[in-house]
Image (tube, rainbow, N blue to C red; front, top):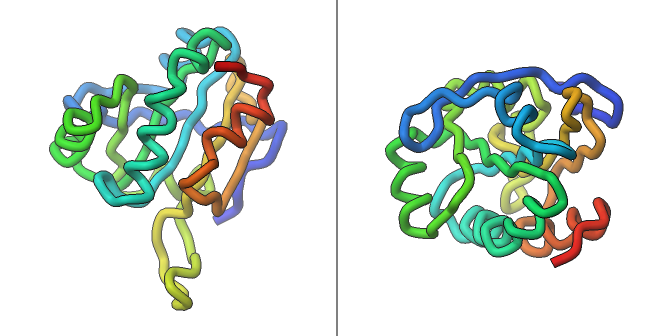
Amino acid sequence: MPQLAVGDAAPDFILPDQSGTPVSLAELRTGAERGVVVYFYPRAATPGCTKEACDFRDSLAGWRRAGYAVVGISPDTPQALTRFATKQALPFPLLSDPDHAVLEAWGAWGEKKNYGRTVTGVIRSTVVVDPDGNVVLARYNVRATGHVDRLRRELGIDG
């Protein structure tokens, strides 16, 4: 699948969150002055995904002050996302995409290297979308550790 690039129109979506409530990108964009940080992760409650989610959680006040909303998307079921969000006290939406339609549309599903083998799955990625729905930053094949801090530096977000 092709990956999104700066200037592309971000594909809209409607996916259930951890409580089963439908959430759309359009809705998230209207509530965020500067945009939406959409991050894609392979599986809830795994070490890397937990690290990344907790980094977003721990810096969420800074993201919000800067005018950004944060949302995570994985192929997990809403029930698995509920357990993950509750256990880690994650105060932002986690969306369920079990059929990979959104992951594929955003270029976050495909072949990747995993322990030296080529597998098909979620490509850990983050895309920042402005309030008009355009991509302002797209990072694919990122590492869980340090990724959130790097994003904050690239976007000039403090604290």
